[in-house]
Image (cartoon, rainbow, N blue to C red; front, top):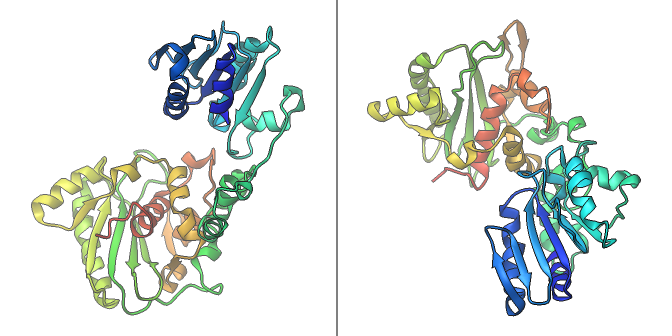
Length: 389
């Protein structure tokens, strides 16, 4: 729709401005417009972000997250901001000081396109939708109204995606992540009870969080053990979890114990492929451990670099669907386990996982070592980041 209106505007001899949060979001519409307007193109430059037509029309391309002056000094008949919910908090200033004035002399129009991105008064798209003084009209279209989307595929997504993710991404609703527990306890239970692992699985593996947060009151090295299966019982079961007070130099002493426990669990649950070893982050203490493992023949593997590059919230989104659809369960042993840590006796694994919230501004102050092991572990066993090969 944006490309069609922009091309029509240029063909009629007017100017159009296309804005996105980042450059890669401009690539597709810019390429399409270069192709559509080729017969009437006078000059064009992807580097400068402009297409000039023999009709006198112009298409300009701007990135707002990198340029607070985007659009400033131009005049547009029509403008567009794609992925409007993913701009930086200062977007309201860019809009009022740089972009809105470009429409003044032409009495031009401006379109915002986006999927919602939470409930946030500082989010430009959220404000544009809820603040009538900004002057935008509302057009609402959930994915189900798209005639090109197979409804059976949409129903499948509804069953497998996290409910909150589905509501935001496919029903276009503004979701308050701050007030919603992302990993609800019921997802990990079966009929409101932890599971008794089937005494046969495909493999057992462990995830260790090797980050060393010097000076943190919550500093811990956490380990979570998983039973993975394609054919028997549940796809993934949290078998056990552990927490250790340890520095990076001592990881080489802890790793053999974790590997030994993986072998023990593989024997207990008759894992067809045995122990799949230990997965760690290839950073900080984990990098040192991986190097030591290579020289000593330990089954220690680095987590996917693509997965490690994701933030905590992004990793939660990645594993949210499998968890919410019940593909990962917790064993009775792991569910009933209580450990004393920093003066608190409780099930720290369940506490960290079930109190996690997307966009939690206090997250840096909370213990999250076991949570990190959980999201990494589910990603390894149940998503496209799987390393079970």
